[in-house]
Length: 186
Image (cartoon, rainbow, N blue to C red; front, side, top):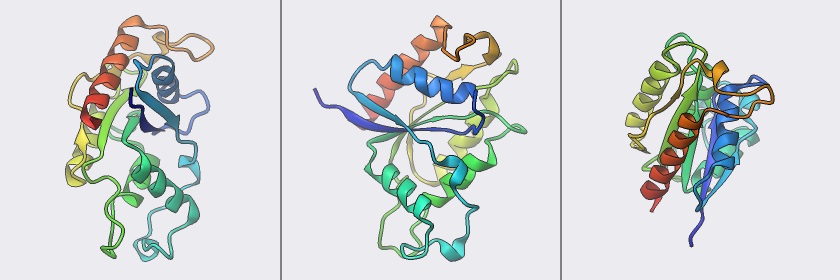
């Protein structure tokens, strides 16, 4: 059986983030065939600067992220919702990996299979943030999984004190989302 490499990115920097916990749940409840690595460098990515967005001038952390995205067979993104949209740190990272101004490297996100999920403490969860994120991926021509939608609303009710996902319905949706991502990658 082929195993596909998935780079998982949490849009949250918070230590006890429910979005990062969703990614850990994806690792734990992986239906098989996916090697899910959680990216740890989001906090260190500098603000996007087009003057530095060339292969020779990009900061090393950005070069590393671009390499990881390029090498991954697919992406799994868990996003919180800030002000009805995605967090600036996540958008910033996506800006760095969505370009090829020199026309020499290729676009890391072009046709990349991507699955999106999110958690938030509100009744609507991350619905609007996921919609905003899908809009970003229209521009990059990424291949986004449409269904199922994994929206962990009232997220505080879905995790235990240790940060483990306990909600069976959400666990099942994550399994379905990962299976759909695996099919897109194939």
